[in-house]
Length: 202
Image 1 (cartoon, rainbow, N blue to C red):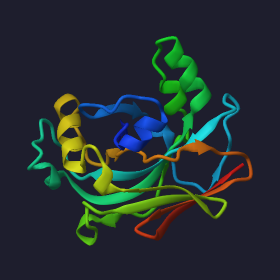
Image 2: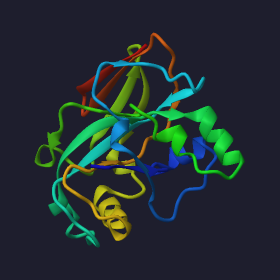
Image 3: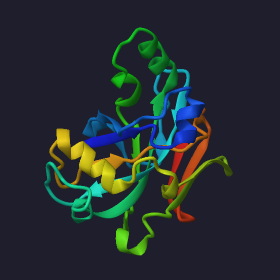
Image 4: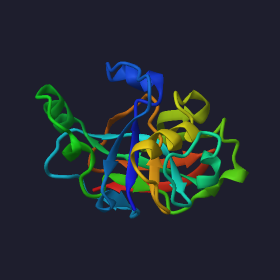
C-alpha cells in the first residue's frame, strides 16, 4: 500500500503557510513505513520543530487508474482520520535550497492513522467535521465542505498519474492551525465528535 498526501487543500492553511492557493490538487507520497497506529510516538531526534497536521483519510477499496470524478465514489467505502507529522525546520531548509523535502514528511511513523474507519454511507461527505485537541485544547478544526478539491476530485486527479490499489490511503489535506508538538503532549483526533485516536508524544 502507499500513502498519498494532498497539500494545501484548505485555503486558510495555504495562507498561514504563505503559499499560493493551488489551481489543481498537489500531492506527495509517504512510504508504508510512515504508518503509525500506536499510542506512544517518540519525538524524532533529527528535528526540533515537529508539527501536527490533522486530516481526513480516504481508504481506497479497489484498483483503478484514470478514474473519472463521477466514478470515483466506486473506489472508496470508508473514511478515517490521521495526522501528517511534519518536521517543519527540515522542510524549510529543503525549500530554501530548492530541494525535495520528503525527509521532512515521509520519515518513519509520520502518518498517524485511526484504528477505526467509518463507512461513507454513515457520513455526509460534504459536511464532515473533524478536529485535533492538544492537551484537551482544540488546536485545529476543519470541515470537508471547505476542501478546495473534494474527495472525488482528488481520487480522479491522483489516478491520472498513479494507479490506485486496494488499501491505499489518501490524506486529504489539513485545515489551518498547524503547530508544534512537544514531548509530554497528548493529541486526540475527532471525526464528527467521535474520538478516533489518542497519541502521546514521548
